[in-house]
Length: 195
Image (cartoon, rainbow, N blue to C red; front, side, top):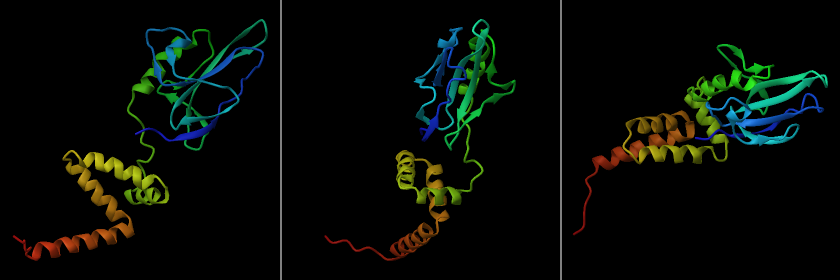
């Protein structure tokens, strides 16, 4: 499942006199020791763009005096509201202020990309999720498509999930009860077949 796209204002350069760029990080080439180790599309600084929620963005700026300027590089994460947040790992924020910035950040960024994806909705109840899907125009259709794809292959977990989802929305719960009553009635009544 792909992350939803959100509108993000890519930060303007810190110092317009020197080099600055931004990149959406989709992969890391661990064989490279320079900025080209970070793969993904280039982003325009100071402009609005649509980026996947929870994606990583690398910002490169050179700051300082004309004679003594150096890179300042940071990795930010796209939030669901369109803001950018500082990314941290077990060694602290992903920032570097050194000419060796690419080598300092490369393996740390690769480890973040390789890690298990976060589950931002983990704390929500099934009922809250179902109600949110009902409110979205494409929510129910997306959910039904995902469940049908799981049901095409015999999967008991998918059947249980469908039952929980249906019972968590009051209107669907009433419909499920009516369907159960009709099934029970149909099982009790003998069917007559014509020759």
